[in-house]
Length: 268
Image (cartoon, rainbow, N blue to C red; front, side, top):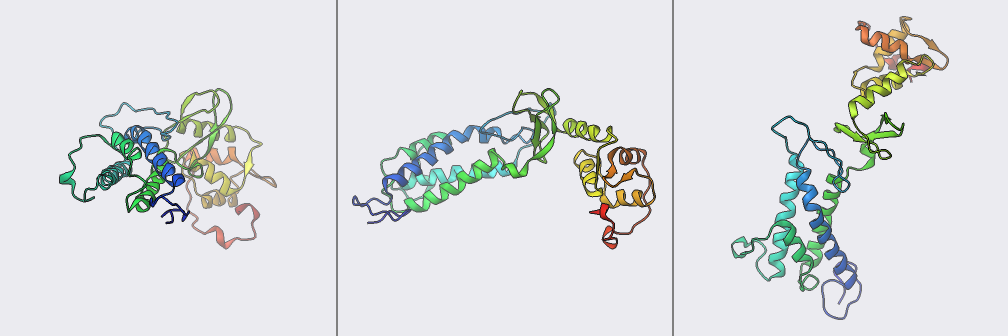
């Protein structure tokens, strides 16, 4: 007979080989470890990163919850209890014959150590379902790095910090200093704008201002440049000149799109 998961030939008649059984049990134990940080991550005001938590809770009640994490916990709980009934030889959907009162963490641990984990007929099916849930849990606790971007340097040690779009606080990985993400962004913009030598394209400048919380469109910067209101050289547009117009509320009443002027190199 072959293993249902990897097709390895096994002679004991089990549904899973020893390697797949250990992997299945390990995933269940990992999920049991993740139950506590998952419940902590229900708080929408907490900093993400459940496996390496750095969380700051605001003082504004009531605390909102993350509905996606709540749905994930419900999915994990129902799957774990269904798996336990299968291992005990009970109809997976017959919840009335499930006398257990263990919590989710205890259920996952008992499933991982159940003697029939590798022998029941649907072992491969539940292994793939549990693997899928584990990937979703990892994504909820530790958002992928590509969702985070550099926002500025640490005030204390100068290390470049990265944060997600919804992060309110950021912690320096070097010195451990906790800072508001918005403060870091504004400090970075201040550094750019107070140095007359810092220059960039219209798109780069608009992005820097918008990331810092000051909404600015590339077309607006180009309109100001065409009117001769900005300090422009071959190296680009000075951040400082854009900043002076942005905070002064300079009106923009010229609507043409940048796409109509492909020959102007600074528009790109």
